[in-house]
Length: 328
Image (tube, rainbow, N blue to C red; front, side):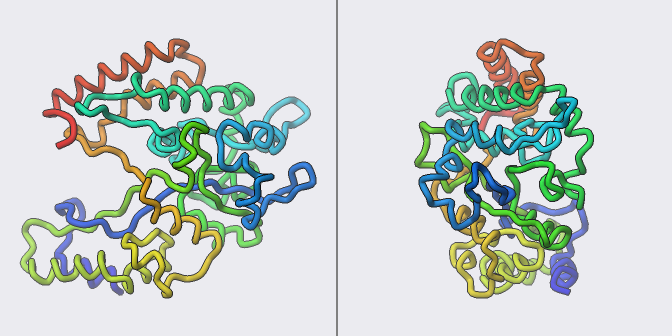
């Protein structure tokens, strides 16, 4: 009812709005099945235990990922410990991983920073080494057999993927589709050189807008202010669709339905070290050359990592120049 009333007040036809305010937000964390590893059970209550320091650090959790991987008799993959391939589920994007390695997209002059920031090289080498462990071709065949990300056949939900990076919506999907699933949530690991980033991540959000031609500007502004700054509607929508509310007050609202899995996302969104994808004059086109290179590199079709990143920098800088510059 609120959604339909909001649309009526805003006079909001699809595709005809100006972006005005952040409504709900999203971030990604580590979600893992609670299964035994060397007689130790990984649960949400053990994340602070030093025995499970591998959860905090990309550099020290190799053995666990391998142990959680299961292969069929013919050598094909049955259960994958963790799949970092960019072309897998959407949350496997460089946007999410870059933050975890402390990598910056742009330098102080608004130029592409991929070849100059060692974080990007670390991220790509880490992902490639894990893909090589599985075998790129075997991992590709496994991906072709598992279910779509937003379906009840999701690889994690069906036990074919032991750990994955995912958004807060997964909590709602699991509750609706596989309530019997035993799992835990924790902040994503970070690079050993950026341990201070643990507990933070890339964040983004849902935009609420008002069309330029609205006949009820004052009422529309009042509604936007109410929906985006008042804890009650933010908690209401968060409970309904399980996205993270966007104000500090709403993060601790007593109206938020208690859920140990979802609580991890709320805590992460409140971290002051969070980052987001840069806004540039070329919009969503920013990063397209990088994505193309990542896919080639992870598949083993690009061996010159340093040279490839330099080329992407040049291509991206040309895009930015043509679009009118870097950050608008």
